[in-house]
Image 1 (cartoon, helix red, strand yellow):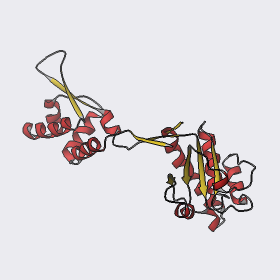
Image 2 (image 1 turned 180 degrees about the vertical axis):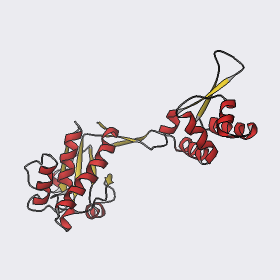
Image 3 (image 1 turned 180 degrees about the horizontal axis):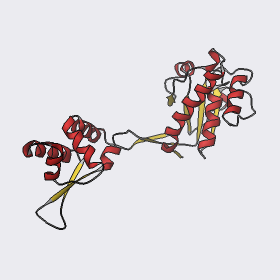
Length: 225
């Protein structure tokens, strides 16, 4: 598994700093919908020209706002928003993997459900395993999979050591497994509440919703190795 951080942390920090002022946020809010000249912004925001110039300078230095000459009257200029600078505020880590392996302690509920959700969302294959496999998949997980139209593979819970291979992206979906796994095993950790503790249908549904939300956010950042 390899990891590549796409954004420059220093550049992102500069954008956050530039936006950390109500007047500059107001400028950005307006430019989200339309370009504007400095004079138009002064009128809209009721701001003194020297103060507006200061705020625009900060935003331009951070790469949030750009300024260009009018094609009609070259004496005028227009400000427009650099949307990519705002998009870069959300960190994104591109990862490569041959397979995704979801792990929980017993491999009877959360990891099984996670693999089923992943395989419905992505062409990259996923499987699951446990650090202390149970004899069978929990009936509550089977029922939840049926309610959410997920396909659970028929195999019994398996031990991680029998499943793990080179190039796997390991995702621990329970605290017990994460804290038990060796420190040198590169992995992600999702602290998903254990539905087996209560065995209530609502708990299993909540686990499915939590896992699905996390998986939907991760899938676009994983590519096949």
